Image 1 (cartoon, rainbow, N blue to C red):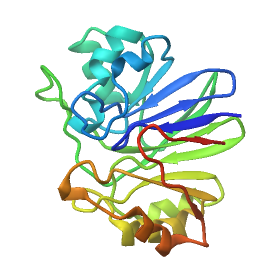
Image 2: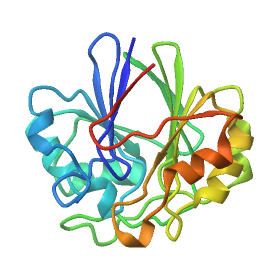
Image 3: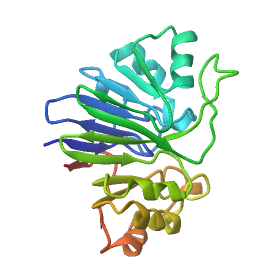
Image 4: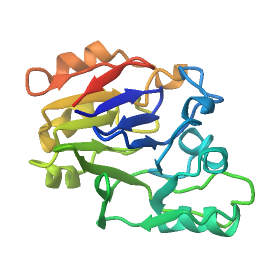
Length: 230
């Protein structure tokens, strides 16, 4: 059995049943909601996955590469930044619609509607297409939508997703209304709301989101540090 741990904003840790440790979109140091810092991962981090390059998704990614030596899984352009500017070569570039079988399971990059700036020292000239992540591990389909608006492409995920992590913060991403519509398209068994309450601009009531979604899917509200077993 694997487990998923939420660390605030979109930062999500996944620990597979064999102990493989993955981290998605690390935003810890400047995150007022984060329950841990980078040192939490210093004992082991096997894979670091990025949906896109905005600061609130990559702020701790670059130092974590140096501190923990994980395999970086991200779009071609983000990987190019890590290689060419940071000199980090333990990488696996991917792009939208492509999938790859890793030792822990499969990763596929899915479309997302958002911006493409890459934040980091020396990142001028680097941009990328934002993505969602469809992971299949331990017999479970996990969809981390990243930052995105509602898109009909989400309907193509129906039948592949057991657990969906969907942004509900509005303003920069889907809000609760559109995220509830996304649930109808994706048809997951469980939905975990993310990317909300970090700042007043994206404050939301997850219980209101729950009321919009259940009983079509179970809504599991995780506060930073909470775990969900799958």
